[in-house]
Length: 366
Image (tube, rainbow, N blue to C red; front, side):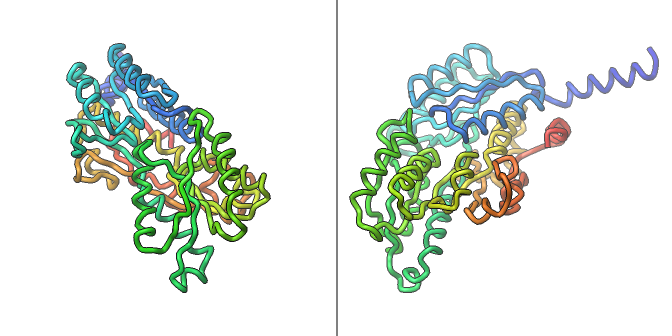
């Protein structure tokens, strides 16, 4: 064998040997219906998996607990090596996933926006399963601060700001975590929640939210609502359309971001700010975590700055605020070039876990 052939062979063998997840099969399983932010997540997850030499699939479960459970079991039965499962219900996720892993001990699972509690409400963990979340409380709090900035006179006089809150409690854990950040300001008497409103149809959240918002906002006199705070951008788009239909100038803020949100913010009307993480990176983050689980490299997961020892196997994605002024300061801004106008933290990858073989595999992707 020639020296050149030996080098090629060694390089090929080294590549496979040094990448422990090459050839593996993974899936992203989402409880909720598809939406722009979760499509961004799926694309990022898939691109990262493929860059790491894996095959990836995505399944949306249309807000069905049974479909979510069934899809996880089917993927486990079909021999998937790793699953990123999202938005599982707090009343069943811990027990269900524990049983799945007992039946399929070689399977690796990472979760997003999925809380683990037993029937008594006690917080639990599952050995080997990393739980991923956004910094939900900070997302919520930063938007309240944006509203305060709109009413400096009220803030200076310690008068509460009147907020119509678009919030759905006891629906998904992310919304409940956001309520904690929001509720702090209620407790301090800095905000007054006029009422909470939600869409009636979760499969058509924007249309349903528009109808609900129009009916509710119409009950109030001009000036009674200082601002509208939205827990989720799919709901916020419906609220925005209601405000435009009513020709109202009430400002609104929201959590999460996508191209349509940016386009509506750029109109220069009601939509003043989004608190968000970078959804073009979030899927990569989740895939990195899952890949390191599959490689049994938990020390590399724990070394990331986004990892928390308590309650254990817990990671959070840093949040940023994107303002209407930032969006309007550039031309044709989308999520793909939002970094041109957003703060530097928006594109920071330092919070993600990594290792040498992963960096080598992902260098071209970045």
